[in-house]
Figure 1 (cartoon, one colour):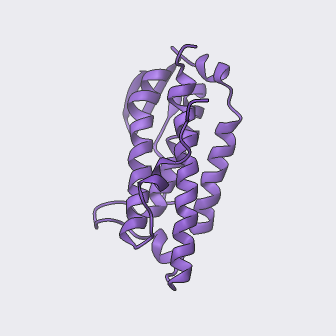
Figure 2: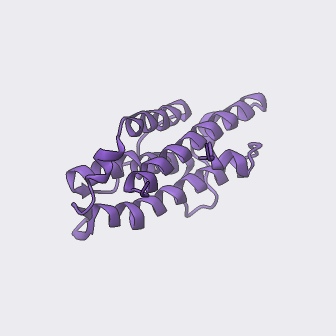
Length: 173
């Protein structure tokens, strides 16, 4: 069996989105048990010049579900504006992304190979193939924002470990 674009992208998105959903749940339980307002956590950041947890989770969805949509329609743009999502809405966003990506078939994703995708940012336009966009732009951004969200929750005291970030492993058999 050949390794496919689906295996390299959607399978990884699903694994880590599952982990993100899990560590958001675990974090929320911890914060509630310790009297920490989830609204404070949504606005938390690691340092003053970094975006808060809300942005990190929105970006996780955008660089997974949104990236696959871009590979289909040929255009990807940064999210505009600041979404006003609370902790529960961020959890729902992760679930929605997982549900949408779960509906994709390997055949449909692999059929995107070679298609044009343009990343548009203001007046700039960066041309990619679908696989180049997904592998060199989307996946690195996805992992960056998932890791940053994990780190923010850890920084705020959530009892998370590496296993919480890894999610469900793809074991043999």
